[in-house]
Amino acid sequence: MLTILSEKFSLVNQWINELRNVEIQHDRMRFRRNMERIGEIAAFEISKGLETREVEIQTPLDTIKVTEIAVQPVITTILRAGVPLFEGILNYLDGADCGFVAAYRKHDANDYFSIKQDYLTCPSIEGRPLIVGDPMLATGASLIEAIKDLLTHGTPSQLHIVAAIASRQGVETIQNAYPDAEIWVGAIDENLTSKGYITPGLGDAGDLSYGEKLQR
Ligand SMILES: O=c1cc[nH]c(=O)[nH]1
Image 1: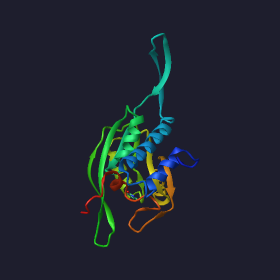
Image 2: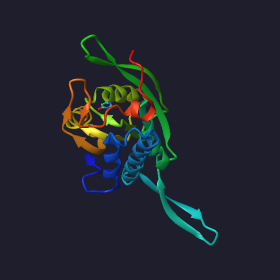
Image 3: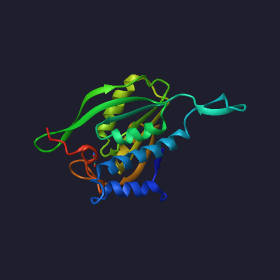
């Protein structure tokens, strides 16, 4: 299932406009906060499909049967660009456990790149909803590698992918690899550059959040 959070105009459109706009996007605090806000909205939408249970709680006056999340999700992201979106998801799904993957694009002399993954730490995802936040779902290559590794930590009950902006190609790659995944995107752009950047996109989400990295 694919949900485009900006399909009907809402605040999400405004935040994505600000992420894209070169006159606004260099305000790092605003950039990170807009990413976080998209994560918060995605978490709210995801929460509607989580498994629930009834419990009885005590108010100062009486008891009442209420509904709560039955199985807490595991929220994961790919360092470093994914951190603000991840924080937004965790702001709302605050009982979740969390996992982290470190991956980067290693460019060769012809500027082709391969995905290098250095680090993975994650609690068990067995029988739990797994949420993977990747702000820019471009080719889908790093996300597929990350999910493959995360799935060595168990079989999740649900798989949710959250992106602020996705390319059409990236969405199709994930849908082919994980047909049961629920994909939540802020917006879809049609094209990728030869360097694998989404266009019109917004540029480099990691650099805009945390400063331009030195190339290695
Ligand atoms: O367009 C893109 C693609 C991947 N990562 C980014 O930060 N931007």
